[in-house]
Amino acid sequence: MISTEHTSKQFDAELEAVRAQVLQMGGLVESQIRLAIEALINDDVPLMDRVINDDHRVNGMEVQIDENCNQIIVLRQPAAGDLRMVMTVVKTITDLERIGDEAAKIARMGKLLSQRKSIILPRYTEIKKIAELALDMIHKSLDAFARLDLAYTAQVVRQDELVDEEFRTIMRYLISYMMEDPRTISTALEILFVAKAIERIGDHAKNMSEYVVYMVKGKDVRHVTVEEIEREVLE
Amino acid sequence: MISTEHTSKQFDAELEAVRAQVLQMGGLVESQIRLAIEALINDDVPLMDRVINDDHRVNGMEVQIDENCNQIIVLRQPAAGDLRMVMTVVKTITDLERIGDEAAKIARMGKLLSQRKSIILPRYTEIKKIAELALDMIHKSLDAFARLDLAYTAQVVRQDELVDEEFRTIMRYLISYMMEDPRTISTALEILFVAKAIERIGDHAKNMSEYVVYMVKGKDVRHVTVEEIEREVLE
Image (cartoon, rainbow over all chains, first blue to last red; front, side, top):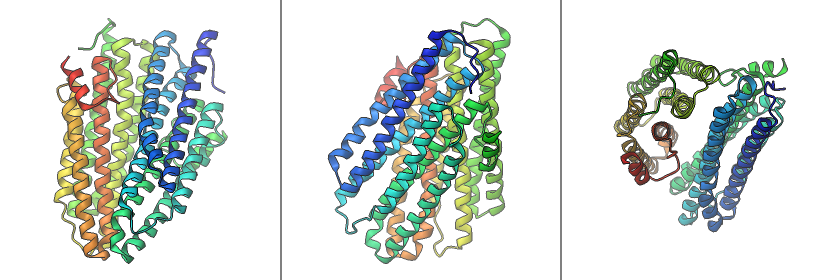
């Protein structure tokens, strides 16, 4: 558990509130990705527009939470575990905001694909699979953050490797598509960028998991191997 | 200018030291990009390896500066402009670290391209051009940070649009290449990912410039238009 030097109940409530806001932002971001993928698969342009328009809500939450963290630092002068918690929040929301950007990007790619009325009907099976993996990573990272529980951390790091592998599979599959029929190249590249956006989402989720280790253990695992993380978590 | 409520000379020196560290990290990151592009153009594999191996230095600097910022918060309890400065540093080094990752990625792509002994000899004119643009953006962002000078901010945001445009030009050019000769597809995709990495670097540089506006003005311009930034800066 995190050490709690502070005694003020009000302070506890403030920290709790900011943590709840992060989870709320995380929920919104998860929903944005789900909707972007759903819109892509169903060629649902109004839904794509909704995802694009709702990105400002994610951005607004980032600015608000950032502001609240600054307030806490100024008014409460947190130290040790509390400060780590606040700094973890600041970093986490940066990644969440960028995941939100990727969701909007996927929706924009979806619109391009829709306009193209493409000559290949993309099979989105693989895109769905990699998106589910990335969503699971976000979910586990937020869970770890909420419960200060490191059990999932190494799992998330390993899942990121799976996402990268899945991305390479999709790329190979698209390359063979393009080679067979060069008229599919533009469409295939748009699908490739969707996959790339999802791969980025995995990277951000991995960052978020690593911040939780720092928050709980006070050790920075951003630049170590997954084996070292596993040792760290088990300690 | 930033407001200076603190009176301690020691505190001033600490803030100055952390700012200097950010600039040093920025210099290392700029050099990593330059070397990665140089290695790519000259097909210089040992230099690519050096870039990949030196990425840990960038990572180490991020962890160190982060630690110093936490120390300053705990010991000095900065408020207002000073706190904004510290938080700006924390955010800036996250972007610098990710720019470092992109430099290493470019070097890894270079190695793949080198192994492939590709049937097309890529013209790197466009890659060089987009890389120069992105490097200039980083340089201006660091300058703005160093001098607390907002004159460059809107410029950097506009340059980011240029980088995005240049990326689309490269993509169109690569598509026509691939369509003409499908055997070039794999190579073309690797070059496309190099261009994508550089486009990302531009995004990070833009983020850094926006943090400087926040630091100086106390206003968050991350999610506003370039016109609004210009108004903000002129005020």
